[in-house]
Length: 222
Image (tube, rainbow, N blue to C red; front, side):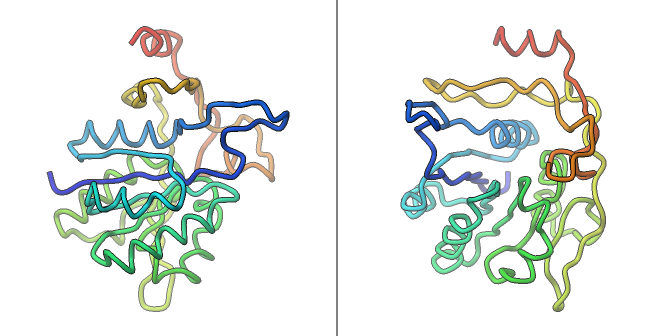
């Protein structure tokens, strides 16, 4: 393959401390770990990092990715855009893709305002959509019909509609673990209620789905 993919989630100002001012370990991102594992299994050379804005220069210079994907959650959009601005100013050929809960909820507003910095937004669960988008970009195929991909073209936001969430979570490869970093386990996705304040309960992330007990035990034994 086809170049390198770098996945990034900016560190927030709360990382490293709890609300009780005790040290905590937040250097792990399950969403990026799942996505990176999925893309690597599909043949894409992918790495992921959680970094501060100051580290973006050295990381991009070292890895030289063809694509950078940012996980956008509530509160980090400003940092993501600052990183994207640096990337586009120094490496305009790099494709910038946003994803995550906040990007999913506000994809239209982000693209209308920052289409000079953002090439695509993955709406909803990222694995299958991101993988299909990368394949299309590498092969020069039309992206207009890819479900779950939003982009800006001709003064309009284009979106072919939401992709159905992954029903069988057991088919996903286990998330990539980083040595020396404590991380939790994901046993389910989606929400069984339709809470208006929760992005996880949006149609883009689907109803509640559970991993099997055997699948979770197999991951614990890895």
